[in-house]
Image 1 (cartoon, rainbow, N blue to C red):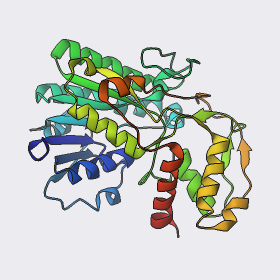
Image 2: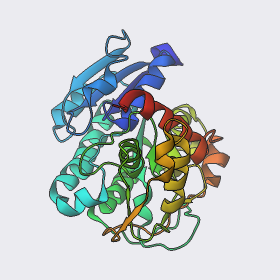
Image 3: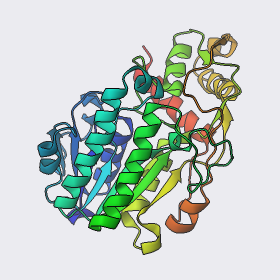
Image 4: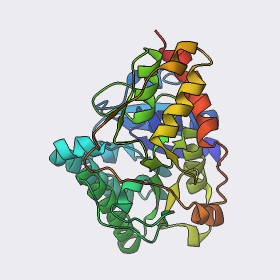
Length: 326
């Protein structure tokens, strides 16, 4: 496969996108990155920007001509570009919709026109909405709880229609709270793990939304990379034109998360072990509990997650301490 295969990674300068770029370049694929650097960072590309198999296209998925330019000669699209964050979508639903729905549709159209072999896209566990059943099974979803969740559900509907109407192969990967190296700890919408890590390293008390008993299926980046690779390589027709939970298949409360973080970080700095935790109000649009069934991915994709939450957390902490400790 590899050397002759060309992959487009939209949002390739972001956290997940840049990890995907790095991985597939290490496997000798040709990689094109499309990014407008709204939330991605150039420093995420620094280790491979001069790789002969890497091409950077600065552009915006809201611009159809940029999408057409990016898909030229591409075999597979890994669509990661999106505006994440539930709070951001509540504060600015219009921009979230423009990027996540209109931009997504542009990429589908461009991929169809370019006769891309398969369109693999970042879906979201937020699609489960108000469904209280655990674990989350792909075929059973509830009503969305935020504008962001609506956009990610609409993505799945559009992908299904493009598969049926135009024969474009699609696979959606419902990401569950992905974390790991290169995840940005800064900004108003930073994810909880890098944000807490930076606060603890600075000897500041992290603030947990609510009583800390909300739980998440925290998923290390290398498990996500594995799922994207499997989605590229799978040839079984039954495994295509569907969606998969992309997770480890276990859940951790926010209270336990902070406990594990303190344990991991205190190996580098003993003061961290005794830092107090602050509890604040619950956050609007948050799902109380999230736990994925990964049976479908195991059965149809032969998915075998290698990193538990705690194993991944140790790797992430090691990276943050080495790269971001001031």
